Length: 306
Ligand code: NDP
Image 1 (cartoon, rainbow, N blue to C red):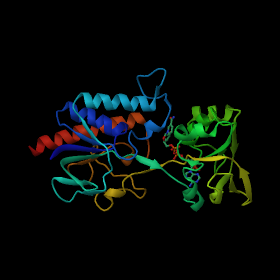
Image 2 (cartoon, rainbow, N blue to C red; image 1 turned 180 degrees about the horizontal axis):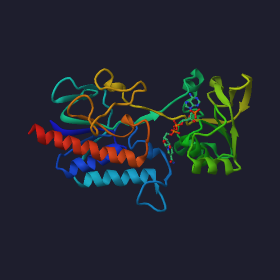
Image 3 (cartoon, protein in one colour; image 1 turned 135 degrees about the vertical axis):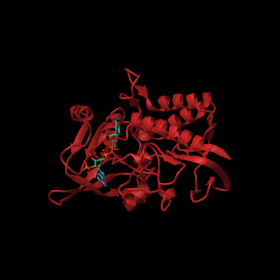
Image 4 (tube, rainbow, N blue to C red; image 1 turned 90 degrees about the vertical axis):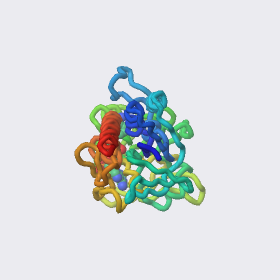
């Protein structure tokens, strides 16, 4: 039986692990399928305090993990397949393995959203990607497109200019949602070509198992055009990984966990941290802060329970 199990090994989960480990609670971190969370899929992080020249996302995550391990946090690979929060201790299943825990910190993060096209499903990993850092290298000297108008899309597009000859940014409006600094960098970059007021309605060509272009629809005129490209990166945001807790933990209409009085969920002993419960800020530093809160709340809960 564990004192604290933390689901998720991104910024929130690892910060919770550092705090819980330093409180001698010997936390177990379940690293999950997307171990390290979104920071491990990014490059230079310029807005995490303490790094005046920025820090590489994967390096920051590695340092946090080492810091947690230093104080006695344990790590387990795998994905939680079922959670029963109706009983105490709580029961988690990772396939056939069962883990019981007195408290649970849900820091499972969010995963990249997709457009929902059949062709997208078939071409994912064959020219369609949600991670420029992971797959950009394959598009050296090619022409690629990025969908989205937020910071994720801006970051993906800027990163891809290292490899691709031309990066088109396909956005459904004519105004970016990205922060000013990212938007300025994007619009100044000569390799990046914005394609405004356009949505991707189909990706070609699943029959060839490669991307040869996208069919675009103009949101103003309704006109459809064929836009050739060798790769498509989807950067339209993320949705929280909370499906496991449906019907058990209260969530909003988009699936974000509802918290109150800090990190508390509707079930005493279950706490939430990071992107699973934050649809507003979603920053590395806010995720870390909420991980700290969850660990402190779990510690107080265990103390009160005796
Ligand atoms: P956002 O929700 O900010 O942006 C998503 C973008 O995708 C929007 O432009 C939206 O269009 C578009 N979009 C959403 N759904 C669709 C769809 N189905 N079809 C076409 N377009 C779609 O998500 P991000 O992931 O970009 O950013 C999330 C948070 O993370 C923000 O707070 C951001 O600041 C932060 N972040 C910061 C980074 C940094 O500082 N370096 C890097 C990455 C993220 P519309 O604008 O019309 O709604």
